[in-house]
Image (cartoon, rainbow, N blue to C red; front, top):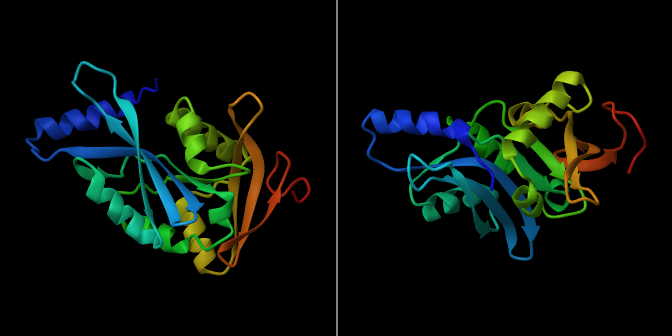
Length: 212
């Protein structure tokens, strides 16, 4: 069971401040393309008592409209949607082949979304499967941060990718996949131009390797 102890302190502060409205902190999001449109899956932190370690629950909503997905998610949560602890947004390869700007714009305009929110493309599988399979979303976030610092993966969080795509530039995002051992592993880089995935580059360094 995954633990997300980093969320306990801010939740305790909310309680001590007398905030009576329950919050539903989201630690990660996954976006997939389905026949009915799109499916957004949220990893939501659930804590039954202050003595228990926070445990994740997974909730999914569907819609043909990308921004409406977030609104639908708000409607099914037991409390107020809390995005300031969201670490990672995973998008499937099918979603990446279309424009991601409507959802990216909606998230970037939300004042609760952190500027460091990482976005990664899931190759050859569903984004929600990788999300639910990963042992620790904070370990995944740290892996992406460390790879960005070392230069082995692009340092391009969601807000920066959104700015680049709006300027008709090329955004380079990390790609991930589930390896033969069922573990999350790097899968090269995903190159976006004109708002959509144009190709994958394999290899360790940004821009290295050959087209997938």
